[in-house]
Length: 236
Image (cartoon, rainbow, N blue to C red):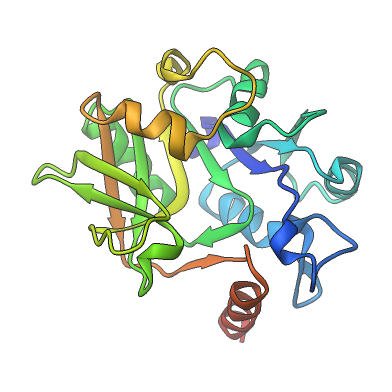
């Protein structure tokens, strides 16, 4: 039940590649039709029933936290701030104190895929998974993490941003984790989910949930502009 499932959003990145076009704000606050990109992610969560959101903030944390204290969207927000860059894995580990549900959802704050979250949660639980990742199709898999599955949609290989890898699709930046995922995290402060946690989960209850929904990412000026145009069209 999504109303009882926490959603953790990783939104502490500096967005260095995006600075030529988005310099005054953090990456997740980049403008899309007069509102922050992160609003689009959060609106999608609320529409599907999520009620509690944990924002993992870092770069320009005050800006993000102040905005959502003033604009809570009818949701309960918690803020897990990192004082130094921790990476996607370190940021999630840093937020552990705030996570109350088991399982829980995790989202990259700089990408959006309109996933049916109820179906994703049902999939995760029906597979008795420890970890599940949403997989979307993309024309250029080398720009993202490509994922290979077996016939039971268990993750066989996870390749992060390597050319020519193929696979069943790309990592859409949407995850469902059981609480015991903490046991698979390295005993260091700064680390990556994609590079340091996911490879270690292969063969240990790690499944891929394939969707046809498009995947939008704002990591570079070119992808930000493409996402902006596509998301503006969706509003029309």
